[in-house]
Length: 265
Ligand code: HEM
Image (cartoon, rainbow, N blue to C red):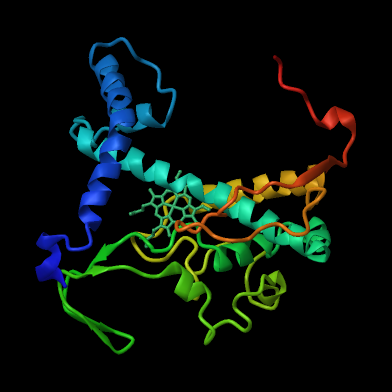
């Protein structure tokens, strides 16, 4: 209801604003300090992503991004990097409870295990809000201009009209699909991984690589099992849809000792 937004009845806007203030408190001084170092000539070498954003120029040689645009981009990147960690953690948690799937994963790591975890366990409940620029009808529903549109990631991924036994973790359901070997994207929105369209995830390739690399290394490097004295991994979910209790599992090295370098003290 766009005309009710100003009232902020569910305190959504207040909560988001207060979270963003905490976020900004950490990021703003670093960003502002780096911009100052470039302006004072103390910094000359492009060394990281922030330097790239600060030094981008338009055709007339002026800075391409304003300070507010740089801050917004950095915030969005930080929201993004949670995804691979959550994806790898959920996949491993589900597979330790069904060891035959973990065994197959060792052979098929580059195929469907993470894709199935993305379907069943989106790491946040709703997609980023989108604003409707005009009156439009989607799937029989009228959406008025100015509405904030939220897609429920859980409801899409667990929709029984799309997915047989939607609550079962079953990577094989994806194997018959016409997807390339490592494909976590789902442009048809039967579940939301990176979403689709102009505002879809810009970190799609990096997110896919980080998820598969983390998971691949964990499965390749260790034999995983439920910890002694426990029967199953507890898959209950927090309000934010992460594992309610961070994954606690037993890991036994399965490669040569030399493959596990010890970090210097
Ligand atoms: C497994 C990992 C990830 C998942 C599942 C994921 C998912 C998503 C989704 C669903 C959106 C919203 C799309 C929409 O509004 O329709 C999004 C936006 C975005 N993501 Fe990711 N993401 C991941 C990793 C990353 C990484 C690693 C980065 C960058 C380092 C990143 C950067 C962004 C940015 C900048 C946007 C905003 C795009 C825009 O509004 O134009 N993401 N992501």
